[in-house]
Length: 198
Ligand code: GDP
Image (tube, rainbow, N blue to C red; front, top):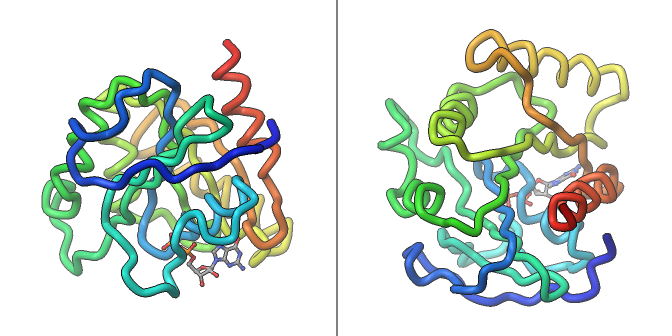
């Protein structure tokens, strides 16, 4: 898929105020600093569509972007700020869980994971919560340019192993990406296109 048009539509913290359009929607979420803004900018060929961490005033809101007038890309707030995160409830703003529970247009989520890091409890808990709530998702491993191919392979395998040990019998669909090199861009966009066409 080629992205010809990427427009910011609205930011808010209330799922009932999200756009009413009934077009497919894909939500991007992950721990703070995972590379979510960089990935969104890379996917949409825009430098500043999503605000990267270096910039002040980064919002903690649900951000809707309309792509090619056909689907919504949703930038959700980064999680994992809290120093002590005993449960998902303590960690997530209620509006994020409300978004996932109520947003009918949501086709699938993308959970971003920094490929360099070992599986973290908060990410595993979040994916488990998505599963329990029957919300389809894929994993996007980010920052692949920071590792050599062998280490990428090893880390992905370790991650999926941990996930299938602790959370599921079957590993979720996943992508390996780098916003610096553009790795994985076509794969993610084609995946979305295939679902939109089906
Ligand atoms: P966010 O908080 O999840 O939106 O993360 P950002 O997109 O702001 O990225 C956090 C930091 O990681 C920034 O310093 C980015 O330059 C860096 N970063 C993000 N993606 C990549 C990547 O693919 N490769 C490398 N090498 N650095 C990245």
